Length: 150
Length: 248
Image (spheres, one colour):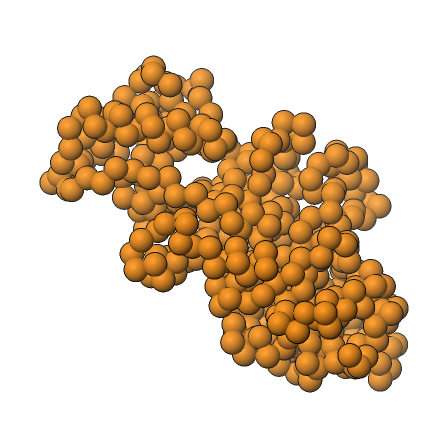
């Protein structure tokens, strides 16, 4: 993915996610694999969820952390590639937020750690069943033929 | 192994409609349990009368309405068997459930927990939904890390603790995660031994959106505990305690 004006969106039907204490907790409901990203990663997930483009995300991280833009761009693209491979996000056709910069007030820059997608594949069985039922009733699950194979 | 060491615990709230079927599925077990305990969470329907029909074969406990988790723990606290098993009042067991699981405990003295696969089934009123999900994973046997398949040594609860009553939905999953963190040896049988009834008023259905949030918080707590265990390092290769427990 090289087009920095592209936006991503979490795959809403199959992914449950929430940023808790700055750490993004993400569950792929289709297979029970779960993920976490803290610090820079938590900020990136938050911006993805809010509909920011890759360019806006790179700018946002660069503004907030003590790091060169080139490093951020390379890290963000790598992270995004991994999120796409894990079926956590998809490329969005929607427009971005009305005021892309408004959620990032400038502050003192803090030390930068490359964002990392922590993957926990060892509990798929434990998490596969519960929560299954949010897919029932008013929130239809995807057609099974479209399930990602894992 | 003598045929008298399993306590069966059935938490129930206003479950008159299906409770009889649940109790019958326990009474039809090829492996006869030591006792059946119904923990009534303050029902206002005919739940008590349903239990009374079974006479002395079923113990009846009652509490003011405090939620299914508290009721399950009430039953757990009253159990006297070496082993405990659980069945929600709207679900069913296969007649071989306890026999096949107790056979595993006979074969593996080190085993702490035995679970099996679970099959969802829809009430006739939801036939349309059943059709829609016909080839979906929810219609297929699923690994049953939930209380309906759980057969565990009762003493394990002294180590791992009871079900977390602060949770409204994910208590079962949270307990399994905790058990695995304590190094419990868990075996998953390939057999479908429990059946989960999907009806209009499943708690999980009513609480669908809340349950996702609660679930994410449970996962966050697990990650935080792992981080402490690993001395600040979240490294997937080091966090295999669950894998060891579950796959052993």
